[in-house]
Image (cartoon, rainbow, N blue to C red; front, side):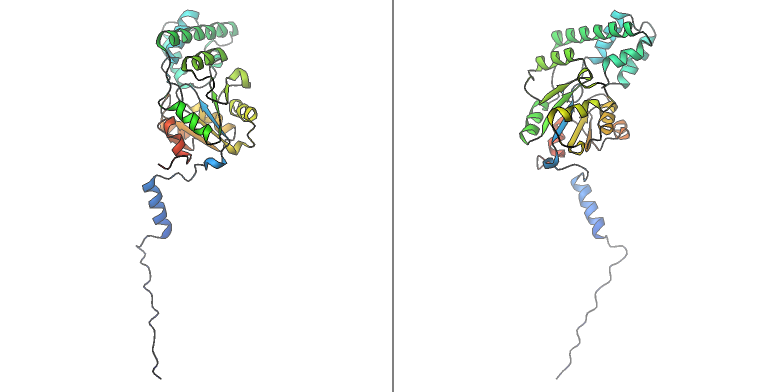
Length: 265
């Protein structure tokens, strides 16, 4: 019987050949996959900021300037520095911002805050208010997928109500929260945690927090949210949002459903 020898030699991979891990990483980069994004099935609550995230943020700084002028809290050459502080602290409770500008004078801070609310209401009445493109549809889509959606803001309940009424958003979200409803404003965790309690979500890991400012992001991080998203439609830029702890940064709220896996795009 003839003996046949089978050649079992296999070419050894070259050190220059890409590994499977390298190929997977390259494919993920090409598809722009975000491994950190949670599965929507695991998300119970999505907390969305208002001004700059879901609502166009055109009048906040102007209302602050009018409030400063009318209340006399900041005058002359100090005004521009005060407005820079306002821009840097976007998303925080407005009365807290005025407390800083007023120093230890609580009466002055309260007067300025009332002036701000009046000025912002005037701007809404004269110029209207607009949503960030697609925001209402995104909120409906997220709720339709089974998540609760809560809108949060650094505005007082009165100013928040004026914005919601102007937009016709009274039944859009599961809840609306201002610092007065939660205890402390951003960057404290009170707003997201109050949203969690109000909606009955079972864990902070099941919560997504979305906003356009450093204080929005810090509030989500401080609350232990499972996923924190920055958006570029408002006050702050990508690098500062990432430095504050955002897990992902998107151009606008319109991209959120795809980021969370709700759309196959």
